[in-house]
Length: 150
Ligand code: RB5
Image 1: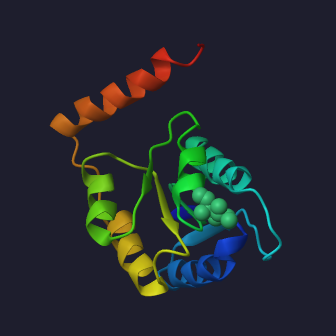
Image 2: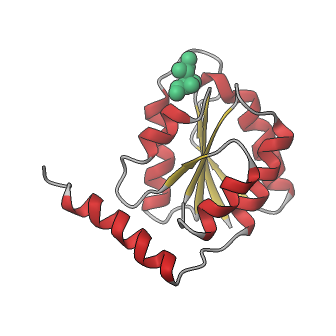
């Protein structure tokens, strides 16, 4: 399993702890930065993570900013990406099970590392259920396709 990870300046410490956690579980990590607390713009890092997932260079992505919102919104602008902005494990689990989300986003200013680890366990350890949920995910992706050249 390979995970692309990216963050803004608010989430460097969280990203480092998450990376260590993923590696301890035998997961390969592609780190798109940022690596310093110098102020940066979260869309840049969201797009990098999303592109890596959309291109198949990574199986899943994790994107972290202060709230998880900005970087999540940026990820969701990349074709093929379904980014889940979560703050607890139930939503992280169902984002995989029912929505087939491929990027997990959260806020380093919102949750602590232990909550992040619980969400990551659910996100990485849960497979898409398919069935009736496939139709609904297809309907979401149809919206993307219909709006592509507007
Ligand atoms: C940075 O101050 C902050 O706006 C950013 O980390 C994020 O929370 C945006 O959604």
